[in-house]
Amino acid sequence: MDFVRIYGEKLIEIIRRILSIQEETICQGGIIIADCLKNDGIVNVFGTGHSRLIAEEAFYRAGGMISVNPLLNEKLYFTKGAIQASFTERNEDIVFEILKENKMESKDVGIVVSNSGINVAPVEMTIQMKKIGMKVISIVSLKQSKSSKSLHKSGKKLYELADVVIDNCGEYGDALISMPGLNFKIGPSSTVSGSFIIHSLFIKAAEEMLKRGEKPLVFPSINIEGVSLDVFKQMFEKYKNRIRYY
Image 1: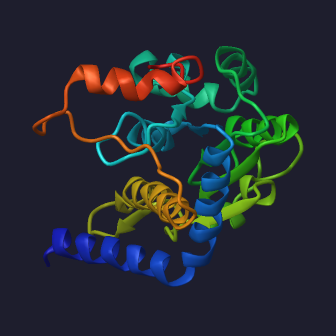
Image 2: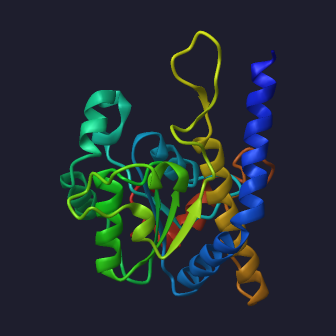
């Protein structure tokens, strides 16, 4: 049996499912982002565990929008110890540390990514973003989240708090492939689906802005003719005091 082919087909099936049943919510999220950018807001993206990769994927990306602020913290990196990072995402203190490091405003948008949607940090970040007055878009596996108990003191899950909830259409446990001889499934899907969703949100936002006669700021690849670091610096100028890692 060709398990690699099966894995690929299952990933394609998930993308097709997202296109089929999540198109409306992606459209809603794109409009929220377009409204935010019209008002000179930025898009703050947060995730823990491997969901952190989606925040990094959206930032400083060829073909991505300039106005993305990834909410990163080394305590959530696996380079500081994977087990410790898992403990950290179950403690609300990391959220308040990140809030001190990043100036978020009511005109901004938050995107919170969490496959399970039950860990303390993503839930608390959503609560704090909404207290600021921000609209929050979540990317979550509803199948996983609805089958799991919240670890947050409120008992709430991410999908119960966000303004727009986008289901990544993943399986319980994230992995897709059952293989004889393995105790657990292999082959996760949430990073692939999460990347597809977050770029789809920005594509939808760009489409909406162009319809309105507005011009979205999009990164070119630095490896194409006519683009240099000087060009990048000029593009950053508008956001230099708002996006931490510029």
